Image (cartoon, rainbow, N blue to C red; front, side):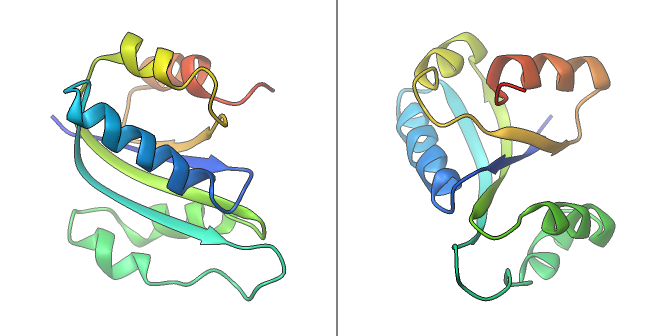
Length: 125
């Protein structure tokens, strides 16, 4: 079963950097990325582009989900939409220990699974 997670980063390039790291981990077979998309809003630039709706409806993700995420990506931040099918969680967690921490803002996980993921990867509160 594929898992959808959406991670918000407090920099415009945080999501891009995370995806680059995940691509390296995929080569090591530590994660299987089925699909990914990045949205970002650079500091001092215009509003976030809205092309996500059509892209993600192809995967059965409704507009309300996308609008909710879009409202949380503010100037100077970015978000990574990540569809994965398998993860070696402890190895991926270790690889991200020195990276910018993302905030899990949406997922299709159970509440317990989401809480654990927030604990392992989320930014310090």
